[in-house]
Length: 264
Image 1 (tube, rainbow, N blue to C red):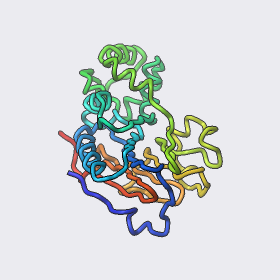
Image 2: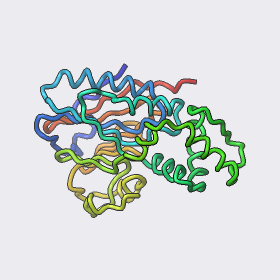
Image 3: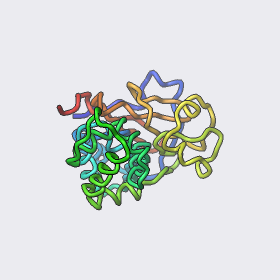
């Protein structure tokens, strides 16, 4: 079940972004999923229902990254995303900071492996049948063992998915990234790490980014709406609220799953 937040929440009226989607196009952007397959499936159903009510023939959905870590069902999320979700939609999958961490680990950087395991990687590994515990000593020998098991457990479709992720996407007057943009720097010249990792300097910036930036990465209780950016990471893995930004013409609004705790 989802609830619909109508036409850019009233309390943000003074900060209403003035963006516009491409003609004959409806845009959807899904925030940080973090292993919540239940919320993703619910939101997909609502997106289909919503799109079927619209006259736009072009349907685009952008996934903002952070698919696997923290939540209870990382593998199921990856299975959904790699089996043509939302037939008839153009789908763009962006790279989040967690996919950056996972990619570095898969490339053999064991330091990133430790970082991932300390920030939700243990939960993700468990869904691939790999046991690791917070009390483990993650020395190089243990990390190498985990890496070997993880590579063996990852389906080829999941590996390709992680390798093929994009860093950004532009549609009309909207720019989609995982974390944000380097303030004062055109999208094409931004530091790639900033697209996945930036926080404070982007959040406090009043700069014109060349479009309204739709991003995740930083958790807020409700979508965070400003004139130059909209943040839609509502902490789905712990809140049960997965947020989707929607835009058609010069209108934008949100859809969200009704809050529910993760499966025990």
